[in-house]
Structures are given as C-alpha cells and as structure tokens.
Image (tube, rainbow, N blue to C red; front, side):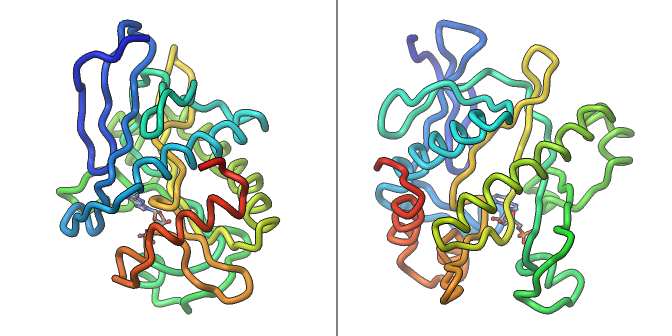
Length: 236
Ligand code: 5GP
C-alpha cells in the first residue's frame, strides 16, 4: 500500500491518505501535549512506543470481539487503519475517581468507583472538551442514537477486557478515553489506546505510569510507558 499526502495533523498523530480509499496511515509522533495543547514537548521514542502499544491492544481487543479500525503495523511509528468518519465524541470510563471527576464533583481522589462511571465529552479543544450527554449527541447530529448505544456498550466491553489485562500485570486501569468512527455504516473503535489516553497505576505502590507524569511534571514519562509495555508483553 502506498502512502500519499497528509490529510490531517492532530496533537500527537498525523493521518495520511493511501492509494486505497478504504485505508489511511496513522503516524505516531513524539509530540506530547496536555491541557488542550497548551503544554507541548517532544519525548524521544514516544511515537514508536505508542504505535506498538496501540497495535498490541487493538489486536487484543479485536481477538476478543471488539471491532477496531486497526489493520497492521507498517514500521516503527506507523500503522494502517480503516478510513473512518470519526464521531467527535470521547467516551470515558472511570474505575477510580481522579482527574477531572474529582475537580468537578469534589469526591475523594483514589476512591474506587463501583459501578464504574461513564462520561461523554465533545471533542473540541477551543471549548475544552465539555461534558455532553446522549441528548446533545443525538440532537446536534454528532451520532445516531443506535450508534451512541453501541459506543457505550463497546467502551464497557473494553473495560472488562483491559481491566483484567492490566490487573494480571500488576496495574490498575484507573480510567481511559476511547473514540469511535463509522466505516461502511458500522461503529468501530478508532484513534489509539496508549498511556497517552488512559491512567494506569501500579497496583501495589500506586505509582502513576501514564500521561499524568507529563501533565504533572513528574518526569520519567517514557520510562513509565516502557514499563507498562514490558509488563503486558508488547514487543518493543
Ligand atoms: P479526565 O477527564 O480526568 O481529564 O480524563 C479521563 C481519562 O480520559 C484520562 O485517562 C485521560 O487521559 C483521558 N482523556 C480525556 N480527554 C483526553 C484527551 O483529550 N486526550 C487524551 N489523550 N486523553 C484524554
């Protein structure tokens, strides 16, 4: 498959056309951003780690019945994925209270959430990704009601699968964000799953092993991503 012109450049990934309209190339860059793009740094090897991490997780999810856009790794920093129409909504599941949930509701940081909490956010940096609900999504036409329900079901299915995967490797999947798209009218998991878009804590020490190390200036960001990858068996 031949890589063609750049179609879109996001905060951490770029998308390129290919000679087949059904597929695009996702290119993972070293750029690391936080606070809606206000803090940006280059972290060496991050593109490669996230590309390989994402390939491993997407393959694991696909093997366990979650439809994903992932097709194949093509080199250290790039993968081929289905060319989807992305739904501009972020789906977040939280197993432990932290981050924006604590800021918004004043609940105790680190509190276990049973049942887990589900939230939708509109993907819009200028508006700082405001929280929305099913009514906003349907009324403003961001997705059809049936597809909203599929996104929710798939996000919970991912929770069951990944909570266990990380628990088996001594980590707590605290929360994560997923994005979905449509391909031939069907809902597929898109974007990426990597430590950039989830929170992972060591189960014993509660050490943060995700992008909060970057957001909070804790250092050792790439070392933490590599540790997570090594623990779950991602070939780096
Ligand atoms: P919070 O709402 O607490 O900031 O984030 C909840 C979870 O979703 C965290 O795991 C966080 O990394 C992820 N998340 C939420 N919004 C974004 C986003 O715009 N980009 C990325 N990479 N992750 C996000």
